[in-house]
Image (cartoon, rainbow, N blue to C red):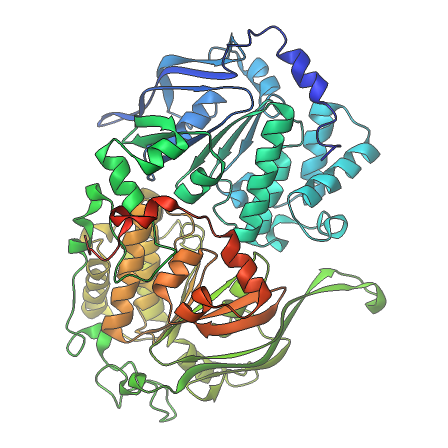
Length: 613
């Protein structure tokens, strides 16, 4: 940390001309428009925010509220045809919104650092992490290559990436989602900026790494007199780090004030509703409470009669050798038993981190190390742990995306052996589907929604022609999108709507087992509540068995029957959900629970999620 603060004097000299009372970042009457054929879309309306040295200002609100638009406008990165229709932006008393492009480029990165929301799109997939860090360090600080290399390793170590000297040589795709987010944070700190704009900086991080990152940010702000504008949908993060908070709705700031005051005694009706929608960490509730403005959304998701609906027909694995389950016309009756549907025995998965033609020089990462557990029919089994602990790898192993290095996986008593016939494996894997963490990258952007949902049905030859079209429209209707979504493309939908498309696609083969890998990590509390209530309905109505992977402990408590805790590729504890949260056995589990954000605002009736609306 001493190395990271070594250029503090430079920052002081840059700000020497500004009055002590002058805000470090001053946004005045900002309005951002996106012109279109049907008129102008106003993404931000008359927004005024001031950020002082050494202060952390949180901006919270739902997706589409205009939070990220403000940050992009400050550094001149609005996507065309977006434009600042009115307003002014000042940095340390100097107006910057009217600067020409070369002058603005000199400010970006050097004086204003930016942490973007999606680490996959903000990192160059063709360059190593080291190359990207060195490029920024040498461009802005003028260090020698050796000094820049040392600083790059220090930055990765500071943001919690293990074995930074080795991992820095890798490419972004070789990092887990949480590790990519940490690399992006390290990249934003390279030039020691005065202002840090953090757009959802902890979205993909588990509670332990989130705590490290928040501590690091808080320390940087205090030691270097930085100003930080943190944009997030996670009110727990706001409560932990922000000095003040601004609540946005439909492009406008509806409430501002000290964090403790706004969260404990919100004045605006929207703020009250937003806080009430936070999943409770202290006890389990029947359903997730919806934000007031979206309380009618769930009514668009149609309930079904499982016995007669296409989704509920011929779903069981009857062991007749063809795997099509034709012997059963309804939901699998064996779900009522405690028999295991999925069994993992001594599962191991090893990835090569340093390839070499010489075996002695190769380095490996044991992503999954001797893991054994079972998932009972009809239950929701949760997996929690740090980023890189092996949670997602287990889900991918079960679904056949990866082949295990050692160990065995059984589904309904049948081994999922890659050496078996491809036809037999397809029959088994048709009954297990996966909902991925990022709904945008997991959906083909060149395919229409109707073709995305129909693809697995076509692949498994389950229906065709008019019947297939009717099934697709019915699935879209069931997840609350409606038939009007069918001819559109994924980019035309919000994050929550894209996740609903992913769920519709996963249901298309009438699976018995669903793997949900961080299905709501990038969603705000209102959309999260809709998606999680939908998953609860699916599990209850279709008798689905689920593996629910998440770093969000309050969500795990609400969704799961049993929970497994992962650390460094090994399973540390498995227990009933309530027992694990109230009387954890393993020291690491207790550590995770201690790091969970404590929101005193949920102690009253305002956060009660028992109300279905």
